[in-house]
Image (tube, rainbow, N blue to C red; front, side, top):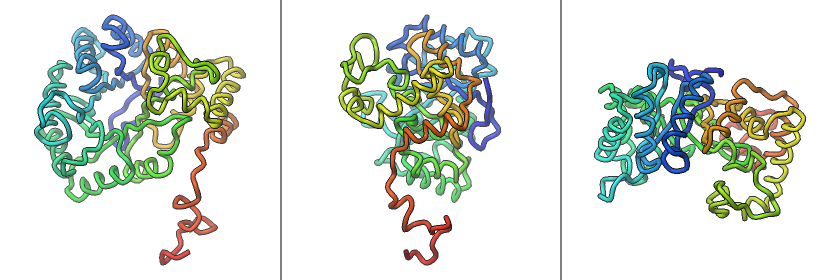
Amino acid sequence: MEYRTLGASGAVVSTYTLGTMTFGSETDEAGSHGQLDRYIEAGGTFIDTADVYSGGVSEQIVGRWLAKSSARDNVVLATKGRFPTGDGPNDVGTSRIHLRKALDASLDRLGVDHIDLYQLHAWDPVTPLEETLSFLEDAVRAGKIAYGGLSNFTGWQLQKACDLIGYRGWSKLVTLQPQYNLLVREIEWEIVPAAQENGLGLLPWSPLGGGWLTGKYSFDEEPTGATRLGENPDRGVESWYRRSRNQRVRDVVDAVREIAKARGISMAQVALAWLVDRPTITSVILGARTLEQLDDNLAAADLHLTAEETAKLDEASDPGAADYPYGGPGVAQRGRPIAGGRS
């Protein structure tokens, strides 16, 4: 396993994170603890959960494992708050009222007195951002969290948060957790540059595109059985109906398959190796149902692609951003900004 700093902070974490969204729903407690043990054995140090995963059961499972594990002192623990945790009007969002209750509940379920990385699970259009960020600052000062982070923020939302923190002189945010993989690269247009500008490390979720990048789904046969799309073929952005008809998805899967075959490794390992070496990546979040899936993912821990392999995947997965506003009139022919705001 390799290690990097948590964004621009001094904390160090493994380049692969164990995600726990399956814990308590798709993976029972024994299986979850087995994954945690195997991950630590492989040199992993970063565990990510959230208060809404399996209705809080994921945090409880992690907490019971921490209570009996000798690895607690080496684990960097991350969780999130934002989404509904009850039926009351203040049981959702990023207000001081909800985040205070959510953070205390997470600490209780995890059985710890502090959380290393506390992340806003998504933007809240109702709560003033200054209220939310001042809560994170107070939580840092109180010793309840070490660092604050974001998840599922857009570029302008990230920049607004960082600007306000800089103006107030509060503790800087260290990470952003976005969806990012060979099939979802649009964050490179604005979110990645904003993260780079502000020193935030990226913690990508869904690195295997909901299973598409493992090669387990056929483009010509609707999936069935105990898989994400087998249970719901029209599942969100991973929808079989939409992606099976997308030529770019076919091109990406073919490119990943060719490199995997030439290397004698799994397609999942190729997709993970491509992602872990992208700019600003701190750690890639692994999400497995089974120990076998986790073992295959962990085999990518020390894997790096060649420049030729990376270029092949870059070309196949290029989302094809239009010149405007990401190029063309906004950038001079030799790469310098145009003065005066005129083309």
